[in-house]
Amino acid sequence: MKKMKNTLSTIGLVALTALSTSLAWLPSEHFEVSDGYAIDFKSKDPSGSFKTMDGSVEFDEANIDATQFNLKIDVKSISTGNGMMNKKSQIEEWFDAAKYPFAKFKSTKVTKKGAELSIVGDLTIKGITKQYTIPATYTATGNKVSFKGTFNVNRLEFKVGHKSDVVPELMKVSFQIPVTKK
Image (cartoon, rainbow, N blue to C red; front, side, top):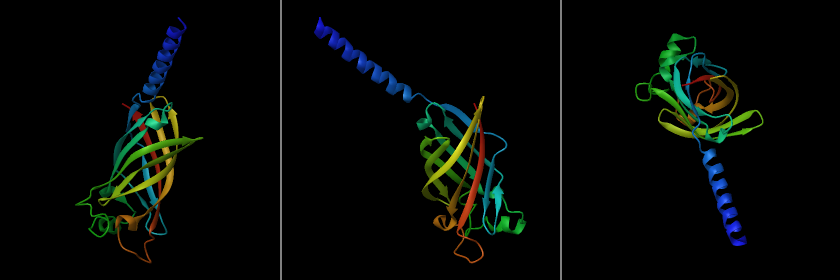
């Protein structure tokens, strides 16, 4: 009888472990980028924003580890406040928009510490992919979540332009990305 109790206890423990492990892998909720997003870049010169972006986020506040970002920005939607500069940014030397119309970000790992997320992922610009860790905060209300943060991108790592005394290498990128549950 004691052997049977131990066996049942072991089976129960294995079943509980399996259940808790499988619950951690439940799919998160699917969200899509909604209106009101902002992708801004700032340097001594140029500064501006990208006006067209889309993508999705798999998000579950109770299971941040399962969060995934899959975003893309239309590089032709750049707006610097200078029409000639916008047009020049599309040529082969800069974004090469004809060949690489989108900058993309796909997360590989998301963790949470306190109120801040650490989003690790692959940033692809002009066909070159580099791993970035992007800090962000989020607010969730109802079926909407908004992610906000700032990070630096070295444009030369992506062969955007050339070394110059006029255009700095580091661009400060600020984002606010609202998403809505679908």
